[in-house]
Amino acid sequence: MSREIGDSEMGVWAWLVVIIGALLLLGGIAYGMLFEIVIDRPATTREYLVLVLEVMTLVLLAGFALGVVAGGVWLGRSSFGPECQRRVAMWCLVGLFGSCLVIVVLQGNELLVGSRSSIRFLVQDAVVAVSGGTFAGMLLGGYDANLRRRAAEVVAQRNALATANELLRHHVLNGMQVVLGYTEIVREEPQEADERHLDAVADRGRGVVDLVQRMGYLMRSLAERTELYPVAVAPIVRDRVDDLQAEHPEVSPSVRCPEPVRVQADDLLGEVVWNLLDNAVVHSDRETPTIEVTVTRNGDRAIIEVADDGPGIRDERKESVFEPEESTADVGRGLGLYLVETIVDRYHGAVHVEDNDPRGAVFVVVLPGAAA
Image (tube, rainbow, N blue to C red):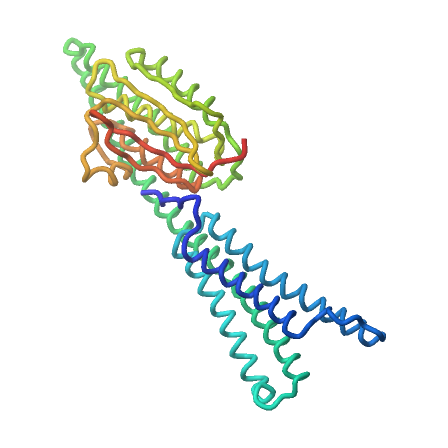
């Protein structure tokens, strides 16, 4: 199942980084007040130079501290999962305590017997080193987490490609074997052939074509890492609903999109909507299936819900329903929801299924929103 994206609120590890940055900022302010920096008016050139250096020190301290705070906010708003956020926070702590240890080791003597002036510069060195070490630790943590995430994506992509290859071979071979079987019946016993055989051949042929198209979308989603851009959801939903009605006139669909909603996506968003709609129709047990598509915004997240009045999905199947199936009964089916999950995952979103009331299922897609 695709990874769950976080709420608009930041996680505990991101808050830890922000708190560390805030403490560093308070430490810089305390340092400036304790030693009365930039309070005395300089009278000589040397005092002016000292003042400039002290101001530069304060600016450097503030820059490091605010950089850590900004990094924590960015971390909370990023697509990093809790484990990656934890690693960044741990790297911050390593930088903080590591720089403290270096200061203690290198200037231990001055900590014990230094004069007031030496203590002042010792404290200056300490706060700068600690702030800089924490900031460097945060940068290294972000780099490390990004590398690990990319490595995980490569492994997931390789596994998905292997799965797709197996499914393609399985479904195409199965479908073509059925086509060849009925073709042999028509050829050898034309008098026994009827519309059922021709319909079976046509159905299997359309199934293989549909499979190849779906696999093309899947390969594109896995292989192409194109830049995401703001996409308006409502026009895509309405276009796909129109396509559904044209293909299935018996369906009774409705669309509710009370406000303009945009998400970070690309032109494959339409395939997400289409496969959810198609899944609702294919698995419906009603002569006139009813499908309701709702698009809403919750904070900085956009939510697309596709509800149907079909038989619903058992609780034990609610997670595995997104896994590819190797059914021999219907070529190409069983890949739609897998494609949905793959594309949504690339959008840094999440998809899950809930029970509809009084019957049926609701597929919920949550995506990062984009500015209107």
